[in-house]
Amino acid sequence: MITRELVLHEVGPRDGLQFEEQTVPTEQKLKWIHGLLECGLDIVQVGSFVHPARVPQMADADLLFSELKNHRSKHSNVTLSGLVLNEKGLERGLACGVDMFCMGVSASETHSRKNTGMSIAEASGRIIAMADQAEREKKKVQVSVQSAFGCGYEGEISMDRVLGLVGKFLEAGHKTISLADTAGHATPDKVEKLFNAVASLDSEAEWACHFHNTYGLALANCYAAYQMGVRYFESSFAGLGGCPFTKIAGGNVCTEDLVHMLQRMNVRKEVNLGKLIEIARDVGRFFGRDMAGYVHKSGPIPEFG
Image (cartoon, rainbow, N blue to C red; front, top):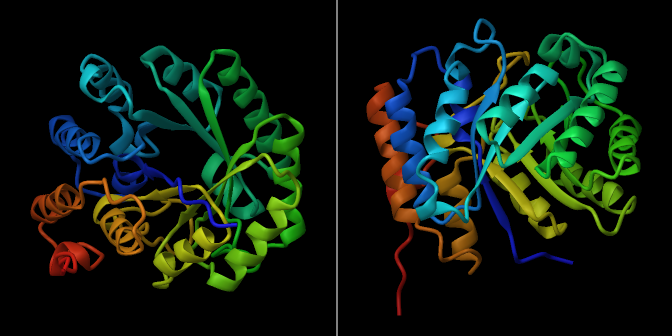
């Protein structure tokens, strides 16, 4: 059954900017984030709590959350999320007021070790313990399976391995779960098959999707997930992004393209698409290059009649 009440999770300030070599000043990030908060999105992922030597663009994550928390009254309905990979990151996130913690385990042994320095078994145990702690602190939690649809290092990922990780999350009581296409290997038929399989594990779980556009299929995969009743959709303004620790990194599905598609389907028409397009164009001016995506270049299809 198709779920119409979709939750739009903007991950550009984190997943989008983490891959950029050019440093983005904190003031510029805040400008974009404040713009995103005005667009009618549900969740904005402000940053990740990782070591700055590994991901320099995220060095100001604590400051960003602190600044945003000081000006929350106008946009108190928008959830501010942050990504954590380990206990130290969780400690930092709790200290600066993250609303929702996102944390995950890769279904690829190779990607897991490159991304976190841990095996799948070690990472899953630590992530579940961290998720438990965050919920004890009354925080929202989303756990994820990364490389769920394939890996640039290992190729095809066994569905049983993905289902095994999902089963561990569910057994621990964590029921908001994202399947992430870190390498961009997903195809619509795989999306339908995998979400159908995980949905059979728990009828009360909330499913999220995170697609990279490495091979040009991210928007098609979003539609396939929508057809399967997935409720949470992660995307990045201007299509920015990519995991620094995957073999071939590709940007995320563009927020403005995703919103345009949904609005053409009479879904989430209250989101300010014009403002999203302005932000994407501003990002292009800042980086001095053409951004991914189409709608910020062409403009939306006009309404007739």
